[in-house]
Image 1 (cartoon, rainbow, N blue to C red):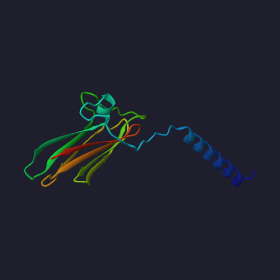
Image 2 (tube, rainbow, N blue to C red):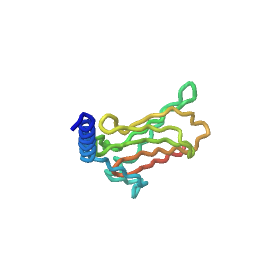
Image 3 (cartoon, one colour):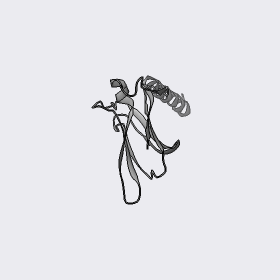
Image 4 (cartoon, one colour):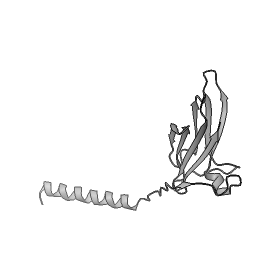
Length: 142
């Protein structure tokens, strides 16, 4: 076998090993179904864990209000593990996307904040995506 043939065989073998290793890596499940609590006034633990909590802070001197969004209510915090995490948080003002945070498992937790001018805004909507349990929405009327 000449040098060229040896390099070809080695290259093909390396690709087979790489593809085989990649095929064995776990693939995270991504549920993109829209979810809603059965009764928003009386949520169970799973619903509390996934529904965004929207907190409005004081308006600053420039007219911006800090809007904090976190996942987990009533002392129940959403996990951030390789198999179960919040992958995004979005904030809408009167239907317009005004902020989005993309989150990574383990290293980041389901929380984000945005500074907005809320003059004339009537409705804020926060959306969060759990890779397993879908997309959850909280609406706040101002």
